[in-house]
Structure formats: structure tokens, C-alpha cells
Length: 85
Image (cartoon, rainbow, N blue to C red):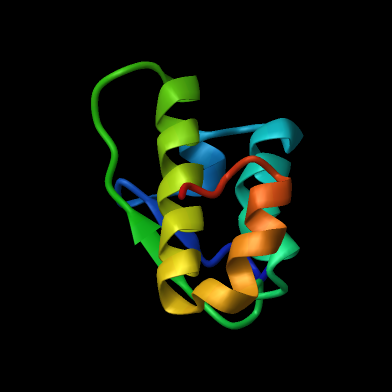
């Protein structure tokens, strides 16, 4: 993943979702589609708990990657269980 280019709710990822598990979970969609160095994203999340917010960010990122390039990104994301029909 690029050098901490993920910003969530105007704070860096490590402040909102600390720890290696969250870091790896956030990296999965972009890693699976080999787009880690290609895109920058920001997300604004509210409500729910931290784990639910993390899941929402990951799913939103996956959906965005499918929207950008459906034919290339759908299969790797589906293997991770992050794609929708």
C-alpha cells in the first residue's frame, strides 16, 4: 500500500483503525486488484461501531474498484467475498 495515503473522516487510518488487522483488511481490495499504487481514496463514515465502519469502508472501496474496471476487478474481489452481482 502506498505511504499512508488513506484518509478516513479527516484523520489518518492509524488513528481511526489502529493495528495490523485493520491495516491488512483495508489493503485487501486494492492488493487483490493490484491497484495499491494507482488510486487514492478518502471516506467519511459515521454511526455504528469501529468494526462496522471498517467493513463499510472496505465494501465501498471494493464497489468503487468494480465501477472503475468491472471486467478486471470483479473476479479478484469476488474471491475475497467483496463483490456484488
